[in-house]
Image (tube, rainbow, N blue to C red; front, side, top):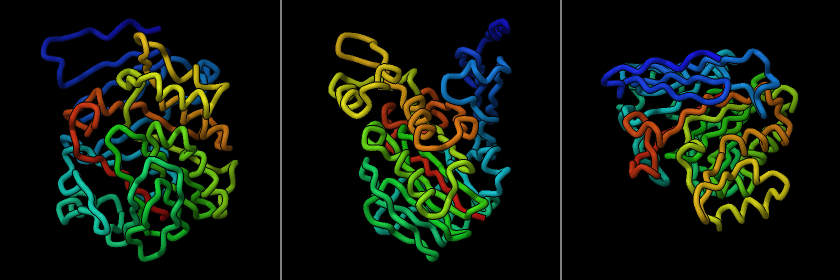
Length: 297
């Protein structure tokens, strides 16, 4: 194990977070993930991937190295990306400033598909021309160059894809969505549209971590009812009637149980609540939204 990083004055711009086997270094312009153990068996569910690539200073958006390698145009915005803080129905408020900021991603935002998110597990199939898909928390497409969009501010943006088959899914997953099986529904939708389970890749974007996500006993009771053999791994007692809930671990496990190889689940574990200067967090009172876009090439 490496020695702890030295602290220096005025370290607000660069924060070092330590976890077993992982160091995450974060700043307004740079993030990277260093894995301290080469043994994949040291990780309960999945080995974190190469992390997020920042674009801009401060970052306007992040991309995944894993998705870029697969050739998928995609981006997750930060609070510094103009024109994406809020959204509307039936017209999303992705303005010309956002289009300009995201121009280098290759996303055709004129063909965007989005939905009214309901904290459930309903699936909507996107069309080639895009547009409002109604009420759904899972979007799936087989149309190239027609991006999907999910809006979050602590909830998990989960991407499931099989680029070889030409199938992509994007899910909005909060605690209710986890209980209702949104991530599993995304896997099932991608497989149902022609994807092959052994080829699927998954990512989990910036979202609230177990360090910050405190919930009450009624929430944990729903997890206990939905996942009686697994919930105790995800809910750690914090105080009488209060728990720290690990939606990352839960959804990594559920996506793996649905058929995705754990080695192909990439979660850089960037907590929205830890970084309100960079990311929107509902728990921190930041009522804007991050947008996760993804499209087939």
